[in-house]
Image 1 (cartoon, rainbow over the protein chains, first blue to last red):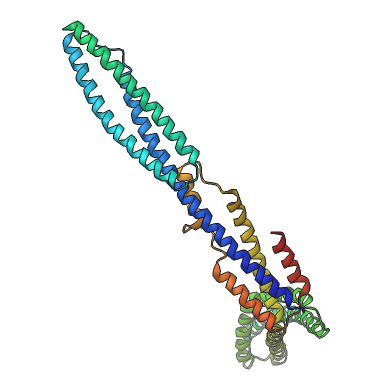
Image 2 (image 1 turned 120 degrees about the vertical axis):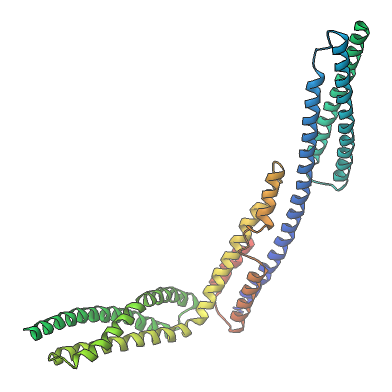
Length: 145
Length: 214
């Protein structure tokens, strides 16, 4: 009878160990998925920083004081808009990546959605700024011509 | 005159050696008494828990003996030299007495080491239980600690933080004190104790409570 405690103890310890290992593996998988989400959020932050950089350039109130200057500014505007196309392609990549992560039922879903919303808002603002600046540069060009 | 000086020097060396022998003899004597007491108690049908208490004291004594081994070795060498030298001296009687005491001391030393081995064998079962108890404690504490980490389900503030968390879970620096081999070792030890019909209700029962509460 006295040996029963050893047997019960070892049995319980073994099942505790199996349970613990299972939970550890689950947590490991969760952490690995979280790592992917953190990477995604970091990449989106980088794109956002690029958008802000372009927004800064497009916020200039300088529309040119003579035709040469306006033409120069229009060429600069073209270059920025080409950069914006590249950023837009990046936006599509982020969108696809977000879809994959959300489909995988990744942790930190809220942060994925929040990152996308932030990115979308920044992009809209940038697009608007680009549109407005092109209009004003065009007006300035027509005026100086 | 020189011969007299030589005899004086020899007498001084002899006196110092004699004092060291006496000191060591009384130290061994004291430890021997403790061992003798221990042996007497072991025949009193002690429970395994009481044997473990003895074992702890016994292990402390083993460490003390080991730390004195070098000193004994040095005294044995000195004794050998004295045996050679005393043949050439006129102080035969006194040096012979010291040599005699030195031999007795060495005999006692060998005896105490022999006794401790005998006692060790008698306490082997207690040692297994002691190890079982220690390993089980270690495993339960380890699982408890890690369980807290798992319960927290921390996913990291950012990429670097999450990476550090993952590294501490499965990386090279992760705490791997307890793994499947530690569990296997404990199972083997437990099986051995069960096979020997070990009686240790209170200890294993307290472990059972611990595992139930965890």
